[in-house]
Length: 363
Ligand code: ATP
Image (cartoon, rainbow, N blue to C red):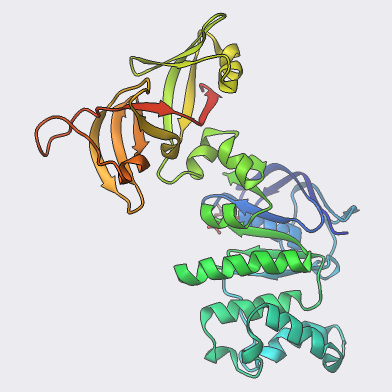
């Protein structure tokens, strides 16, 4: 049972830079937990504090119920893989994977089966006798993972392990990492700045910004119900629409949202209306993802199309309607209809029906 708990952890670097602020997280045994955030937000600092490579300024780190702030790295029962899983160049793949066993005084011959089994799971069984210089980048990362996992650590830390690989390989290895760490059952902390990687890989994901935790939950929870506009925006491609709206609640009627001079009506049967009641008379910021909008002849908000982009499986329309962006997937079989002169932006004949609104108190 290996649980990682951070309780109000802070990191202030010697130059006074406050890199991590009051971070509290609990990663239960066997979970694949992803730390996500833009460059410089403090993800690697968190990982390095867990690893014991960076001192914790204040707060507590608990590993399986044991206070670990001052525990030497070697006593933390963990293994780590970095961006460039540096291998020993003069050792072949087998020698690289078995290295930690040798250091621990284990007889490599006794672990023959384990090495074979792990290299098979990693898809590098055929390369066991080769030197690192003869391997592809993806194979090298697999060997680095093999070396990290061979001693069956309680905690597996990965810092952007895929960022030096090309897009195709990243997708492939991403799926394999997920399958591998779940089959091994090791508690894993995985750092990335890549939203897709985080959402596809994680059991749960934490989003950091400037050293401050923004959100934590399953990928579905943070995507569908982001706690902050930062999370909403960071997880969205194309960018989420952040739209100011006035709220008017009426006992008989439901909630009416004023958006750019138009009105969106939500009857009481819509659970989002209930959530907005307390904001009656004030303004909120709505986060509306482009993929939550559809052109709809019975919709309530109309807009003027400023530009259309073809995205292969869908069209993306930039619509001026208070709501700035509209995903026009429906147009795939149903050409965008515009009025006006050819080449000029025209009025979208259809109307927009909104779904998936996220409401947040206006700042
Ligand atoms: P990236 O994805 O770019 O690696 P990150 O989210 O992992 O970013 P960290 O490496 O944890 O970020 O760095 C967080 C902040 O702390 C950055 O602003 C960085 O410049 C700063 N920082 C890191 N190491 C030190 C140090 N030794 N002294 C002072 N500041 C540091």
